[in-house]
Image (cartoon, rainbow, N blue to C red; front, side, top):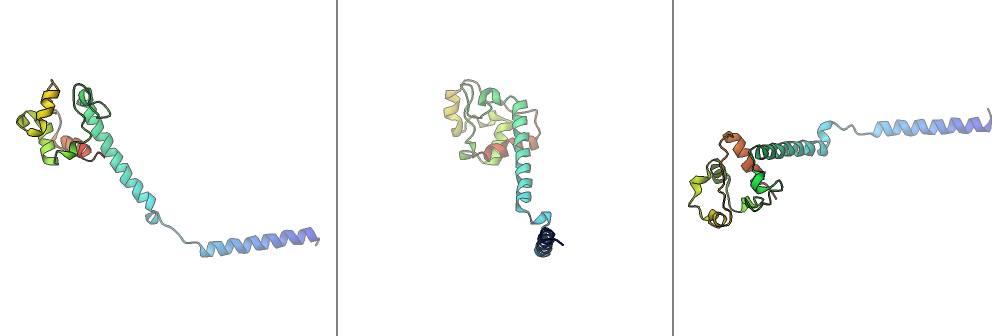
Length: 140
């Protein structure tokens, strides 16, 4: 056996030993051990809820007055901060029938600033209205 062959055999033996040691000390990870996987499920669910709420708002023409960014326009107010003034139950009731809130002090300034009144979302189910309310109340 030549010196080159001896070196190749030595390198292969060292490689094999290191490979076996690595395999023996390797910790098996299950999919449940991966934190990023759990987080991605939560993120996916959150994104689904947001997309659903936004598509409901789009189909009900909310963006006509409030814009896609929800920052408002000359026809409707900024609704990104509704959580500062509304609780979920009242917001759902308001979205169903804004006329019931004609005497609400929270809306007095808005009524004087915007000529067109808020229209209710009568064509949506209670669950769909609640999804929109949840989305708006969770905006940061």
